Image 1 (cartoon, helix red, strand yellow):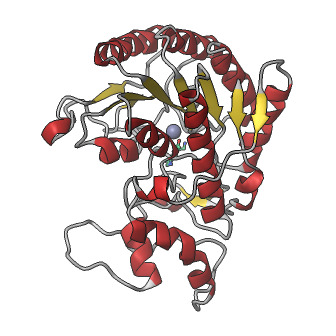
Image 2 (cartoon, helix red, strand yellow):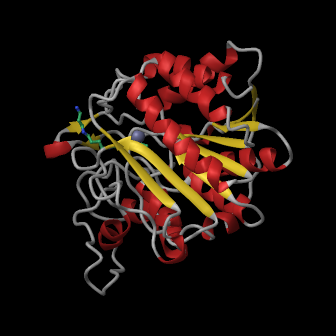
Length: 340
Ligand code: SP5
Ligand code: ZN
């Protein structure tokens, strides 16, 4: 299997994030995640690790607002020029509620406008890492368009919380959405998101479209991040109505309960008759994930891979979350193993 991976993520290493109630904790979405996965992949005889192609900004601008991408590109340099006391990472001081007409020009004003929470921390390497990550997803999409049955984009930072004009949840550019959008120019695409958290960015990006079916299985947002998207009655709007589906899960969800929900999602994908499948593959559904609260085992993750691959669709697999670094390699190789 072709695995697209870039070392550019290493300079995106924010010193901390801010948890519920204001606790500063070491950044969970760290480089070690990639090292664990690379190590596990190197122990297989089927992973072919490749540098991504640089697709430039056009495919990114066709998903994300240009001014938002410009903010990602320039905010670090602007941040260093401020008189802020702690410049270790850029985070906002207020959050735009999109109820007011003004778009500020100051750096902190734009940070609040373009950032959704306190976990998408910008540091020096964030923009370069995010571009390389998107190029991994685009390269995997191109490989599948060129007749690979499946390809894996080992993306870091992840992408599914990033919307057209906002960063959030460790995500800056929506890698899976950029990949799906590149394939949707010619073909029907289904995007299935199995990360533990609702893929709110993906949901927003495709909400008004009928050419990309988006389905997300995730922890019920009523109790879990991102809280404001991912409810069952959010089904798309305009001509996109009926082309989005959320499957919120209870905390007690085990392998059997997860798999029965997955089967419903897979039926919808089958009925849509897509040419391609893009998978947002988060491993934070694992029972011992530090952010996840559901009970899916490694065997469960392997079975999820088998059932998705039984759709027999050309599949672009995009790395999203997963924070139990000790088992991340095993879970990813088990999952990908089902697609070979
Ligand atoms: C890509 C991805 O998986 N992003 C997830 C971002 C979630 N960040 C906010 C987590 C809320 C923290 N709650 C902490 C409870 C720890 N016991
Ligand atoms: Zn997640």
